[in-house]
Amino acid sequence: DTGVSQDPRHKITKRGQNVTFRCDPISEHNRLYWYRQTLGQGPEFLTYFQNEAQLEKSRLLSDRFSAERPKGSFSTLEIQRTEQGDSAMYLCASSHGFDRGYEQYFGPGTRLTVT
Amino acid sequence: SQQGEEDPQALSIQEGENATMNCSYKTSINNLQWYRQNSGRGLVHLILIRSNEREKHSGRLRVTLDTSKKSSSLLITASRAADTASYFCATVREYGNKLVFGAGTILRVKS
Image 1: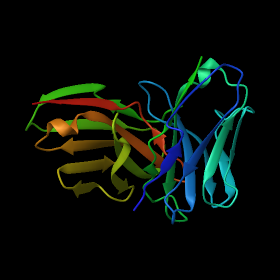
Image 2 (image 1 turned 90 degrees about the vertical axis):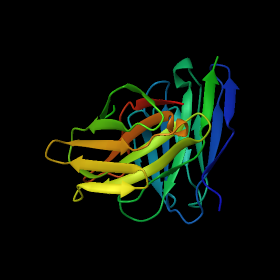
Image 3 (image 1 turned 45 degrees about the horizontal axis):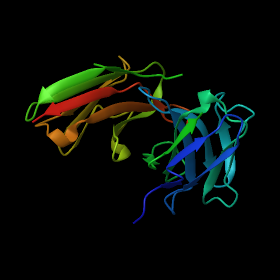
């Protein structure tokens, strides 16, 4: 039984470069979430998908951020023209079910450092 | 922005003692969840309590929910060194889908 996986685990990039992260949810889960966590804070919601449909986006998700889940399975989060303020842990989570009453299972995260 | 606030921000206890963490939130909720995070394992789901429930147990964990006060508490009994971690409460709003986290409580259990 595999949990949520994320790739890469660490990414160091220079300001202005584009980066893409991948998340593979638990296979039977139809909901997939992206969160961002900075040091000393709890995770903050970025966006979520139900199957392939992106149903909600946070105001934190500026025009430089885009997320996809093309076939309702894995998801990618791309950040264009990275800024130092984008440095954070990016967490992916998945959950089962079509309502909000299910726990979310988190992946190990991708730690992004923008130099 | 984060909805919840955990109290205390940090807690240090001896192995075998009980640890209590509190969480307050601001809006009506569908459910409240507690998570643990340490550097080695990432965020791990501990327990979910629905808005129509008042208390829930799971092993050494006891969670209470008071929707009239918009607060919850997590009790860890007979703590172990391995319980050392950050603990977060997170709410799902009544008509929402995402988790809204607090800033967390850092628990240190000394052996």
